[in-house]
Image (cartoon, rainbow, N blue to C red):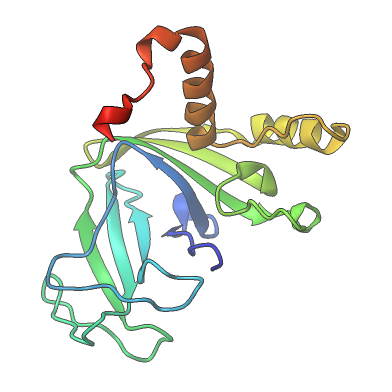
Length: 201
């Protein structure tokens, strides 16, 4: 199975579309219970792809489109909007659903670097595969700050490209960093992570 297609942030700050690489702070959007996502393809095993926009006037983060394949081929309207079937996957276009529940940060990327693609393609989660990387901080659905992480990501990428055989690879990924922090914490404080009691299994 191939990687899940990234969700997209469209036309951010008047630029091209950005792939959403990581989200911290909970989910942005999940289809309502009336829509039951089904497998689209191995590249979209989740069954749907979300497209977001940020209002240039208010900074409000909104779901603007949803491409989805349902298990039962039923497509009830979302906020009065019915899907368009002219696309590869039925798509709800013209949505303006605010993400007011969300507070956290989002890592967005664009301009995939061809030289980084090889046998170990991490482009679905590692920002070092991209020329441009931005961190967007969101408070109750409104963008409060945008931080350009491109130089930091480029430094990490060059470090990886120069590493010798056997040296550790260092992706730019918040999820990976949390995982590594957990491993280090477990090694430093083993008493806080007791081994499972076989009787509990």
